[in-house]
Image (spheres, rainbow, N blue to C red):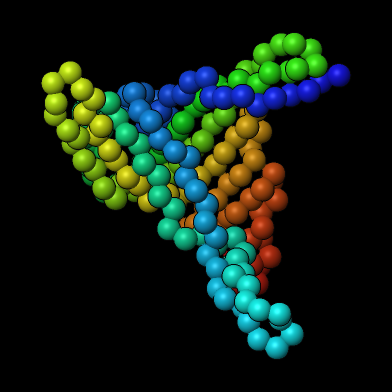
Length: 173
């Protein structure tokens, strides 16, 4: 019997525009925070923060680099960048007693908001940081597209079902 235990990210790499390895970094996968509005009134026992279907607040993403490089300096420009995070996740199958490697890919289209050149200290990391505004994100787990969020193209898809398809149709799109 299979008993999969998701354990950790083994490692990951960061690429720019599909080919250029950007460097050694740490980052957090963007948080999708739904836009909400307050619903209250007759027939409701209180207040509900109701999500606006398929719409999200400003979505930030940042990467912290070990040092300044030519590529991290190019990110200072306010152009759209396609950033891809490729990770190898480790799972343990407790039933079979074996480890399994599962690929995770996060593809992000983003515009640079803030860039820092980092700190200078003898023998220490520079912690150069780039912060982005995310306009599109795709998450693939085990080579399957699981989530697509594309603000400009009215797409919020979970497992291939666009939750905004009816909204687009209603808007004549």
